[in-house]
Length: 106
Image (cartoon, rainbow, N blue to C red):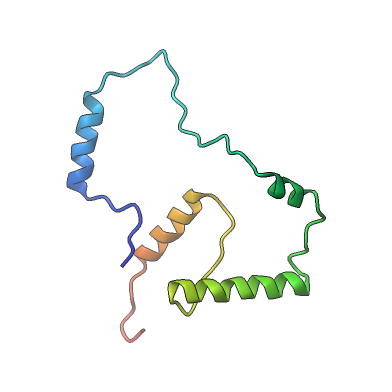
């Protein structure tokens, strides 16, 4: 079973202890932001095109096809596509992990 970003309390405490022993650098800023990301030319050109409406028949069919392919890839009956950051993905996974199965549900 896949469990993203798995960390035990014991491992966290050990890593935190090592981190806290390191000297702080108050006069040197540290950026934890990702990037910059190089965007390939073909992607930049795609942004120049008129976007497809999310209500169009083409978009809906393509979206359903993508969901079907994802279901096959992960061997699942259902998938959802979320538009957002990696943080949103982590939040969605965390929310699913906190769900309790109710008696009699499958």
